Image (cartoon, rainbow, N blue to C red):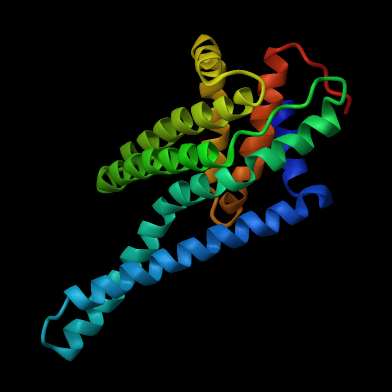
Length: 223
C-alpha cells in the first residue's frame, strides 16, 4: 500500500498528468473562490451592528470564519471536481502500469456526475459535523480524519472498481475488503488535510485506488 501511495503521488505531479492537474485544481479554486465570495457577501448583509467600528470588527471575524469554513469545504469541492476527471486519470494509470489488462470502461457522463454530486454532499455533511466539533480539542480532527477516510476510501475505490465491475459488484468487493479500503482512505484523508496540495486530491486518490483495486485482482504493475 505504501508503494502504491508513493507511486500515486509521483504520478499526480508528473508531466503526463499536468494537463489534468491544472484543470482540476483550477476548477476547484474557482468553485472555492465563488463559495467564499458568496458566504462573505451573505455575512456582510446579515450583520449590521449600526456602528462603523463594530461592523469593521464583525467583518474581520466573518472573514476569518469564511477562511475556516473554506478549509472544511475543500473536501466537498474536490469530491465534486473528481467526477469530471476520474475516468481520464484511471485510464492513464491503467494504460501505463497495467497494459496487459483489459482497459476499464468509462461510466456514463450523467451517472458519473450524479455520483460525484452525491459524494460531495456526503463529504459536506461530514465536514459540517467536524466543524461543529471545532471547540472540542483533538476530537474534531480525529472525527474528521476517520469519517473522511471511510467516505473517501469507499467512493474512490468503488469508482476504480466500477470501471471493471457493476455497481453492486464493486460495492460488495469494497465491503469484503473494507479494512484495506479504510486504511487506504486514511492516506487520502491525510493528503486532503494538507493546505494547497489537497486541491490535487482527485488525481492522487484516483490513481492510488486504481493501484489498490488492481492489487486486489492480482494484476502486476509493469513499472
